[in-house]
Amino acid sequence: MMKKFFRNILIGLLSLSAASAVAQVTDISFFTETGEILSNMPTSIDMSEREPVEYNNPRIDDVIWQKTVYRIIDLREKINFPLYFPEEASDNRQSLFTTIFRLYEQDKIKAYEYLDNKEIFTEDNLKPFDEFVKTYDILLTVHTDSITGDTLSVEIDESNIPNREILKYYVKEVWYFDKHNSVFTVRLISLCPIWYKQDYDMGLQKYPLFWVRYDELRPYLAKQEALLSDRNNGARESMDDLFIKRRFGSYIFKESSTMNRNLLQYNSTAAEMHKEQERIKTSIINFEQDLWEY
Image (tube, rainbow, N blue to C red; front, side, top):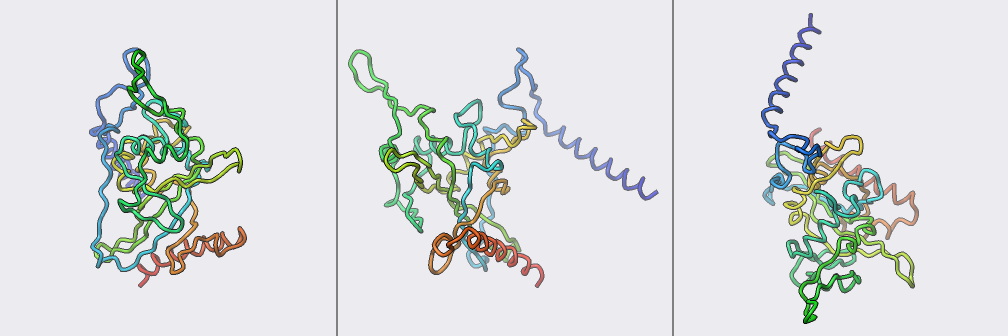
């Protein structure tokens, strides 16, 4: 009897959920009149109209605990493929770096000089796009007037964006506890793409390029589609969703501390490094558990 009762409740809830979903679906056909699949698959909200979910911004007096953590996102890990692919923009999709690059090129976001062991987000530390292109020898396509020879426009072709060699990102984030709302959460602060570039004299070299503020990226990443699964191409979320929902793989390489050292500077072996990473993760988890226990 009880089993039948719970089954009826479950059926009722599923029916309500389905009815709600139907009410939100837009009246857009999956196939076009010529039998092709829409490149912009139908959703309740057009991707171009999406806005990032607003952060809760606590008062400074309400944040009674915080810790800054630096991570590395390795794009060669399968979980991070939605941030790396496609290698060249196609349909409505492009990689995270292509998105950053084009926004930087169009002066829609600011990039700041990468410095060892510190980030300075000031006007004095801005890195102009022209200077960046010149520093890293990124090829330009110059269009000239066939008669006068005057330069008409300068652009960077899709194939010349070094997306394939951007293999990692540094990520700066802050974990904090907001006593007013009783919330323990994390907020991304900034990203730094890392270019693994082949140098003719020195071989493969690692170049952290610049820092960008994540809050400046969010309005654009919210509109940028990410394909989450090869098994289900209908599984669509924005790149902002991937970061906010923590749907990326990463590992810690530094935490805020008095000596301001990264883990490599005081751990000589891979085993020691791993142990220290686990210690930092555990300290964050333990703090949250202790909050609710006491």
